[in-house]
Image (cartoon, rainbow, N blue to C red):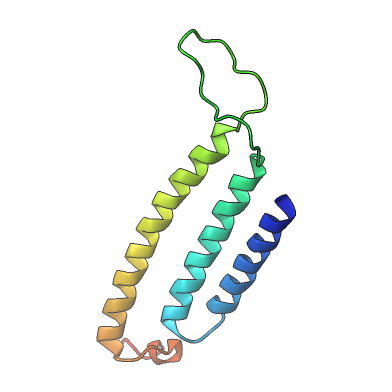
Length: 115
C-alpha cells in the first residue's frame, strides 16, 4: 500500500510542479493546491498505514495494545489542510483581483502593471 501512496505523491508533486511552470494564473493556483495535497499525503503516510485500531486511550489510562495509528501525523495533516484552505482562498481572491486589474490570465501580462 505504501508504494501505491508513494506513486500517488510523486504524481501529485510532478503535476503540481508542471502546473506551476505554466503561464496561466489559474494553473498556478491548481499547482499550489496539488503540491499542498501531495505534501499532506506524504506526511500522513510517514506516520504509517496500519489497518489497526485508532490511537484512542481508554478512560482508565492504560496503553492500548499495538498496532495503532500514530496521531501526530494525522494532527499535522489536519492543521495543514486548514492552512492550505486559507492559502487557497487568499490566492483565489488575489487572482480574481489581478485578473480584474490586468484583464488577462497570462503571467507575462503582469509585467507592466505599475502604469
